[in-house]
Length: 223
Image 1 (cartoon, rainbow, N blue to C red):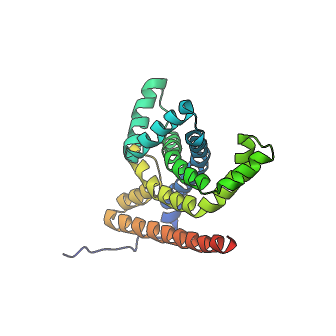
Image 2: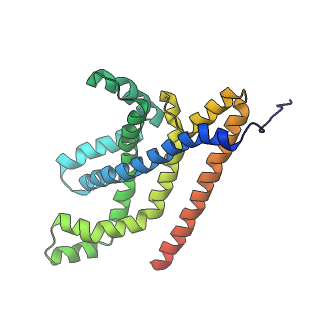
Image 3: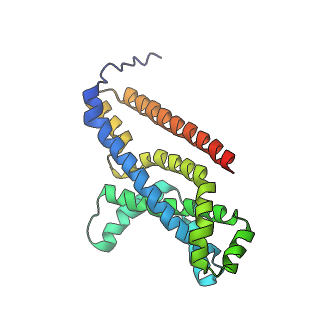
């Protein structure tokens, strides 16, 4: 079968007008969702490790519930149902940001919980012996070490998050994949557009994964 592929229509103007706008949103969504997800996820992790049932139970239900639902379904539910509850549309971009923070927090929570549990209990007991409260112990002793230990895993999850940003296509948000699709439709070359998008995603994610591996080696040396 002759696909008759032609990539000659790609030029800098096309990339500037179509692709970069979507890339900007994909990167922005990744950064905001990562920061928000880590902050919210850390709170969830601390709730699950608090030993208090009234904190542990809702956090466990939230984390397990979110991890059991496909992200695309969460995106669609939030986009379609929240406007009915608040009485007005909130837009595809804002819906994507809130959904990704809420969803990714469940995964970052498990990463942070594992990181906190990896800290030797002797250090926690040493902080308690110095008169530190639970909050001070976590802030000054446990969390800094947990973040360092879990940094490669957190960055790996961030790369997965970047790949998942393509799912906002389902609600019409203008991400990088959408930019390639629009360019392909305008020039009558949808196959070439999707192939180019796949190559760009692969190159970016492979480069980021290689960087994470190098960082992991450096952290292992520091330990």
